[in-house]
Image 1 (spheres, rainbow, N blue to C red):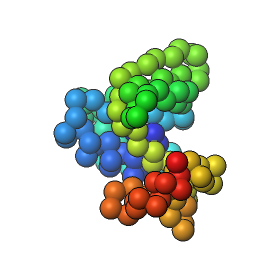
Image 2 (image 1 turned 60 degrees about the vertical axis):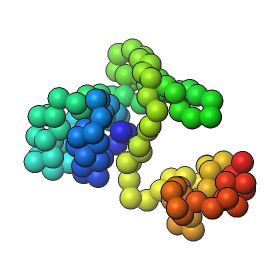
Image 3 (image 1 turned 30 degrees about the vertical axis):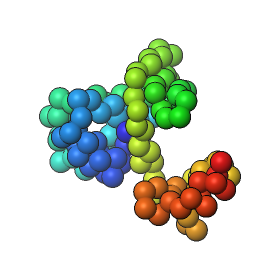
Image 4 (image 1 turned 90 degrees about the horizontal axis):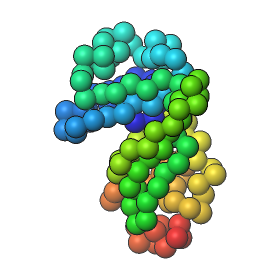
Length: 127
């Protein structure tokens, strides 16, 4: 999970119910600025959630699907690589996806199309 707002926190808590580990990557030092205190407490009390402050993704590896994620702590410079098959980005309500145009299918509001909203034509156009 990438993001430190309420939506990211809610998603992390939800995912932690069905997975062994949820890595919560946040570029800031803490969750206090953008998340409710109640939700921060839930995250702190959930053993399956590993909170990683000052952390950014530096590489996504895989072939036909995601196989591993590498990240770096911006304060220590330490990097780590983990076998991970899913990354969720919850970094704001306004998508900043224009740089993905032509690589993945976007809807008219620039959100990434997934699931039943994704047509064969979308896949073909996005290569």
